[in-house]
Length: 83
Image (tube, rainbow, N blue to C red; front, side, top):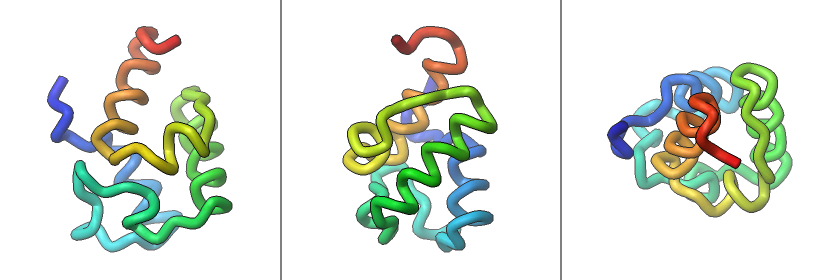
């Protein structure tokens, strides 16, 4: 798996639900750099859990991680590799 590849669902949720411009969705972007507040990050975590079945601590994973990190976590969890 390439860490530079951003999970398509992440990009879809960010652009569709949170109106983040697609040009700003980069592997090195963080939720903070995308101006996602804690409520938006929590909502993002719920959407990912509901659509992909991947649960994570939104403050720990989503707030501080890059989109590449989040994508890698989701891919690993979907594949059954994440604890």
